[in-house]
Image (cartoon, rainbow, N blue to C red):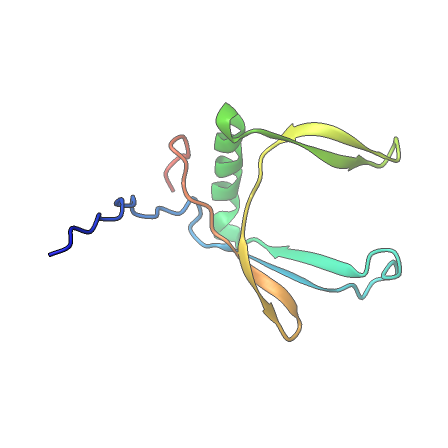
Length: 113
């Protein structure tokens, strides 16, 4: 009989937010659609705003979560490198654009609900 290795056990997923955020990318319907053809919308449930704030603060306090990236400086009109954290999300393609949820895993330092 073959001896198959067992996959590592995963910790149960504990969300950082009471309700996940919802995001979508669609065609930009505003005046600047020739410059910015796409528009990103993020919906944050009221009951998750404090949780999101706590989660972002916990990420900020964890040096292992900090990364460097370029962001646009509107005064200088150039990209500048800053330190920050990422909120990652998974999504799908739909008839009206891309969409998905942001449902981060609670970090060790997140405050409980």
